[in-house]
Amino acid sequence: MLNRTAIRWLLAGAIAAVVPLGAQLWAMRVSPMVVEMSSAGSKATARVEVDNSGAGLLAFETHITRLDYDSEGKQVEVPADNDFLVFPPQGTLPANGRQVIRLQWLGGAEMPASRSYYMSVNQLPVAIAPDAPGKSGGEVQIVYHMKALITVAPPNAKPAVEVVSATPTMVQPKYEEGQPVPAKIAGLTVKFRNTGTRYAMLAGARWVIDGTGTDKQPIHIELSREDLSRLIGVGYIAPTNGVRTFDVPLDKSFAPDSVKIRFQP
View 1 (tube, rainbow, N blue to C red):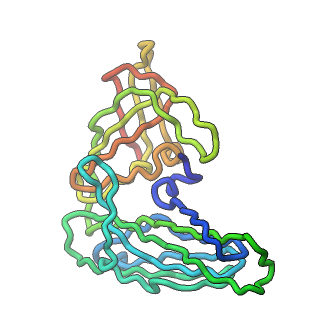
View 2: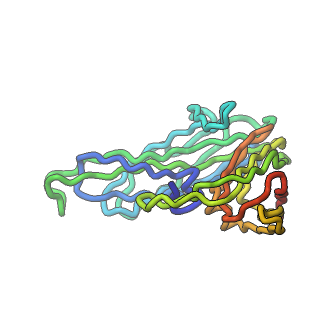
View 3: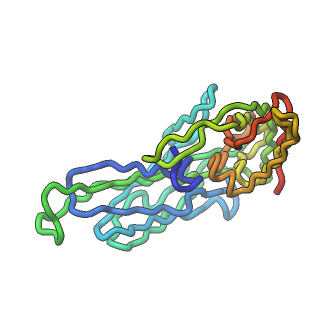
């Protein structure tokens, strides 16, 4: 399924839980959704804002998990609240209120490679007074759980991304939830490896794809940052031999072993 922005594909997944408590819908916004920090210096601290755009009280709590990948490339989250000082770790916001959450890295300046975390901001149900304005029977309260990606890198760390393989295949385009499932189209399954000491975000650079079509004609495709955000999200790859595979729908049929991909700023 396709969320409305690339970052939300990877991060936000605003998970709506229906709780039979209240009379109104609560709305929560977390920004920024990607926070890049350093293990030393002024960037060892950061700020995240939580906004309540709803008409009632919004209570929330935060949790930190470290983001890793298993041998099959699947995401694994491990509790890591002790790696950061988070203040305040919870709070209550009035209607249209805003809270700045401050993060301080506690993991030390020396680290061999960057790490990535999720900061989950979890909305909590709030009891509603029986005589609250507009309250009627049978209504529900919607609570949201959102995640911001927090990256921490040592000074001077750099990514080093290589294309392991680019295989022509039929790809399922992403689609909006609730919409009909589109038919598969021609595209590429691309496997990347990052041998550097810093994470990489593949949507941060333009892709230039060249190859030969099944009709033996040359194919040249350039994907902008906006294109990549729509197709693969932020394209996060962990450091020190992190591997990710992405299905990229292109509506172009490449011949096997003909594809070359390069990156441009």
